[in-house]
Amino acid sequence: MHDFRSDTVTKPTPAMREAMAKAEVGDDVFGEDPTVNRLQEVVAWRMRKEAGLFLPTGTMANQVAVKCWTEPGDEVLLERRSHILNYELAAFAVVSGVMPRAVEGERGILRAAALAREVRPKSYLFSAPGLICVEDTTNMTGGTCYPLEVLREIREFADEQGIPVHLDGARLWNAAVAQKVETFEIARLADSVMVCLSKGLAAPAGSVLCGTTEFIEKARTWRKRLGGGMRQSGVLAAAGLVGVNTMVDRLAEDHENAKALAAGLQGTKFRCETPETNIVIIDVRDTGRDPAAILAFLEKSGIRAVQADAARIRLVTHNDVGRPAVEAAVAAFRAFKP
Image (tube, rainbow, N blue to C red):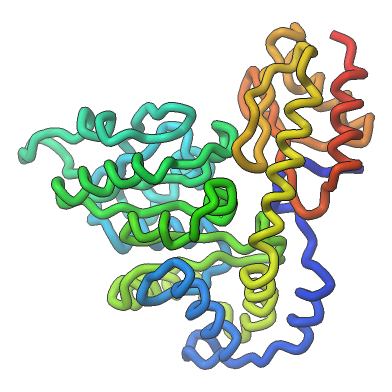
């Protein structure tokens, strides 16, 4: 079975398992886990931020960031298909008491002009904009990357308005590799950034939230309050260190595999754009069949994928699906008879 449902299904590498077994640990709630501390320092340095905080999940990292930046009743401006808005169970409403202002993007990419249209005049009649959230790469719009000039425009607009910017960088490593830039060149355009370790980097769990020292101290309090204090979590951080130090460059292989998958569907009734990174979104409307029927056929053919919406399915390439798996997926799609 070739599993393209997500890059979250990756298994830790042998090097990660060895590092986990040998990890030096301590109680991280007391700040005494040396491996966690090292991971936080390394990732913060790669983002060129003052400090970092290891959290169990990207969702928790995003929600801690929202809580730290906003006050109850604030608005959070974000793209209408973003992960924070659609796939985190309305946690920002539950935890932070904020409301979303969904903005239409271009293939998931927000523009400063679109944000400007949504920011209302300051008045006691309106809730205030408390935070702008940017997702790079985009998830459900095909792993697209924010051009640096677009992020600069958003940064300039946010500064003019006095609104902080949080970067949901669950796949920021992919964006940096695809654009051939260092991660900090993207991260420095946001006030806080979350990067995930358990997707393309193949670590078993964890994300790191980065920002100023003051911001991270506040985030540490909220991590504990939300149940994210993990004690001897160096066993997980050790795998994350291996991922950060050895797995970033190989993401280019995932991107090439995604392009090969998309190219293999040319001339069929499955429509998709050439992906920028490792996410392939396939429109199935021309087949006359719904995504569920196609996914069931693929499953019987040894290919796992997920439904993106009523008309599309999603496949994600990663460390555990190489070119043979891509070729098997193309063959399965081509064998499907509408």
